[in-house]
Image (cartoon, rainbow, N blue to C red; front, side, top):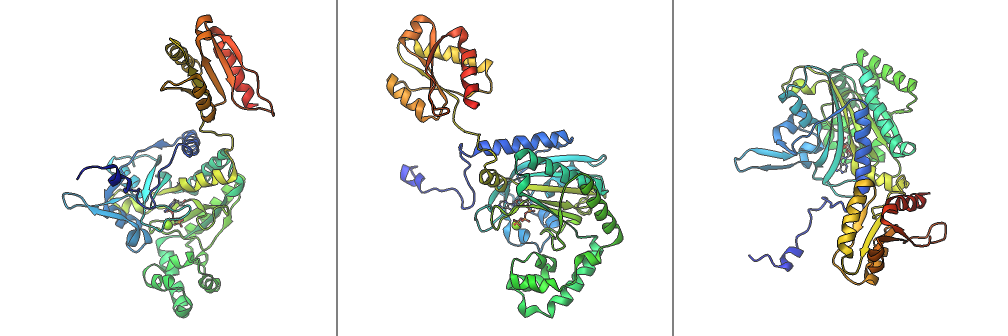
Length: 438
Ligand code: ATP
Ligand code: MG
């Protein structure tokens, strides 16, 4: 069929998969750059992973009876009939790569970023394509490693100016064995109150009872107040490791609350689990979550390797940056809009501005293109949001000068425009732009 305009206009992005526009990308870039800097400063190396993996990888790692595997995966058959899945999270692929590429002979500190896919109900802070930065550490079993991950995440929040609106919640879910025993005790208790449980929790009673601790239903939560506590079932080693982690965090000045109902929704965790939570974003308040997963590498066919990691939800962090005004001074607008009218003016402007870009690499120059009268170009300069216009007209060409025209008021006043010699232009611009920032 012909690709008519009408046809195309009916094509929409997939629900829950968003375009991120130039007005928002400065937030993303700031976030990504801040995180990358902090991670590098702790010696973490970036790993880039495929977005698609064998479906089996996620089933075997995340767990068959989790929300993700039961109902949230984008799974399809490729042309060979192989079952593939768009990754719903990054840990499984990272472990797969670490095993396959032979990275596990020495301790590894790795991070990755990119889109994840889950078929969920889209709402604020919850998309079907969302983005995470994940951090994974392989080969260290002791809680000093857990502490390092938490410390570096705390540093990221400080860097971003959002440390005051996130809280660290911490728990230990113990060994597989401890969890098995606890699960029995929990189920024994909850079956006696089955009719008071919300329908989701009733279903989970058989499939994944620990997830009932996560229920948002107030009646279920009230029932849980009198339920056996996971903390009482912890094995000695998990308990000792958890105590040590808490001591390390206290010594480092990181505050936290212990949340005995924090269990996390994926099967592969053991011992330490944690979440960074904010009350600024409504129901989707977890901006970062992780924990230890000492059994996963062996479970996926690698040699027994302890591991711990976490993932941040980028959309929620961007929302938080917007919400808190932590980046109020970041503008997507250009700094300088370049105008030229009259014969030879455009070519002259082009050459000079190319030189300026070399000398002032952090300054954003937008060159007017497409011609038009001097007046219409000034209008466009104003609309662009730029701080200054740089103007080449016939007079400037004749005298080898350029006019700098301030476009914004500052302290209630607009600076006068000035005409300077080309040789003085960079210094004058730097001065004018520096003044703007004060
Ligand atoms: P939630 O309880 O909010 O569903 P989760 O436990 O499923 O989160 P994880 O799998 O631990 O989330 O992912 C880590 C982080 O990724 C979350 O804390 C959150 O910030 C983010 N995240 C998870 N799912 C989504 C989504 N659908 N949209 C946006 N961000 C998400
Ligand atoms: Mg979820």
